[in-house]
Length: 302
Length: 288
Image (cartoon, helix red, strand yellow):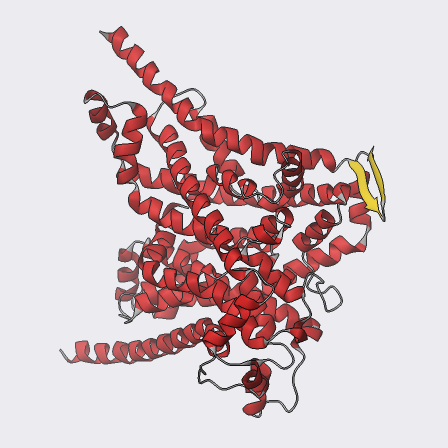
């Protein structure tokens, strides 16, 4: 009897492997092999100079030395981080506020579903179309300039796309708009998970809502906040569509909005596979380290 | 009695002020989210001449004419929409079906590499597609799959994030006893999956189908590297072309209609399904 049962279990469990086959095969072919191939390419000098193909010649870590000795990567890393921070700081502040308000039962906010629907909306908009829209709206003769002139705020068009900080600001604004709704919902879910007896106890002790927020909500929310921050940073490092379309791939003015992935995209288009590979490996390592932090914190939570 | 009353009024004042502040901020943020799309809508209905004369917040009546202009123009916008639609629908279908299958394999069966596979999928979850793009492009050109939708659709089968969501949902929605019962009734494993498990997973599948559809619909990086033929291009690539073309040559009404055409379908679908989407985001986050 026991034997039969055992045989049956084994027979069923082989289906575990069968059901995994599609995932494993597709992952191997389309993700893992390309990943190793990218690593492999990073070790070769391999690019086009005019019409002549240079390489592939094995250069070891030469591409990495070249990548880091050039100022470009540092400039683009700085740009990416600046635009991420400009978008992330207001995002986390607004999301914390809205999350606290949405999850506070004593406020009894009406129309919550409407507001949640609206603030999440920009997240689903095609980033390239959104950037194109901002480009037309904020162009020198565009509606925003017209509105500001009609209101008498300015006397002549402000050139948003020719100024370093206004261009970076626009990229950050778009990132902020696209992601604060998502973050609000994540933080709200976290706040709903906090034991309500803590709030009740604080109320009995006469704590104000500001005190409750800083002394109870915020410390208990720390794991989720770190999760949100690191995943946002990982997403920020992948910033591409918005600045690419907004500046037509140039990263203008004066390469101040050129991000790391735009740099990678340039290498891929010009078929500079050695440098493209090295840059990919660097991005892979940074993302991996950041993911480890997330992993550690989400494990701690359980 | 008296003390209770004063206490309540004191608290009530605070709450009124806080509620008012909350509404003001919420209305402002909603305005900030919708404003751009309102201008887009208004400007899509105005003629090029009207647009050059300055901005008004009142829609005009040139929407149809602008649309006809776009249709007669050089940008294959409708073709692009069908391409985008095809790629996004196929990706969503494959992604949800096979992610559910992968989750099912890990959730229901007990086998040697189960733990390893789960850890592996979790570990690769955050690898961005961009860092493997170089090798991916080489693979695509080796397989002669440039200007083909296959490299945009088939990889959706292996989606770690969707897998994780399905696994989480299965833990709460799929009791193992149900699978056992199906076995006793003589149902094969594959049939059990298709006829019993999939219907049970419908809510999760719906949420993930929407997210996969939208991210595929919006995807620009990979398609731009793979699709070069005008007939195969998806909407984001056409938008990028619109941006890189000489701007002054264009009829601005048509530019707005083209942008509106790639944004508004998603907004309409979203408004219909918003309840599931917002819930879905919160659901995925609880344990994420």
